[in-house]
Image (tube, protein in one colour):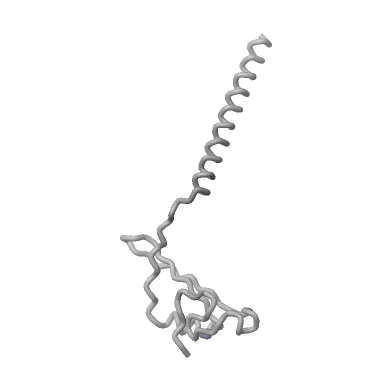
Amino acid sequence: MPPPDPADVSACATCGRPWADVDGGRGWVHLEVTRSDEADGLHFVDADFCSQGHAAQWLARPLPDPAPPAPYATTWRDHLAVAWVVLLLLLVAALTGLGVWTAGRFLLDAF
Ligand SMILES: [Zn+2]
């Protein structure tokens, strides 16, 4: 059997069996291993297994190097979301100012 591709999360990391081959995916085990590196912080390794036995075999071996985090590219949707949040904050500030001004006028007229 060919060695499993670690990037393919739909296959058992030990035997390479596809996810759908084993009882529709029931009984599969997902592991997330967290390692701490003082220089870079936390690293996560995720793997899926067709059985707990294969998960134990995988854990008994040296862990693979964690994949470096993918660089995040800002999209126009991110800019749109930021603009929307800024608009909402401005609206909240304007309505708060209007409420304070109205309350002040009410209190001045009452006395
Ligand atoms: Zn397996």
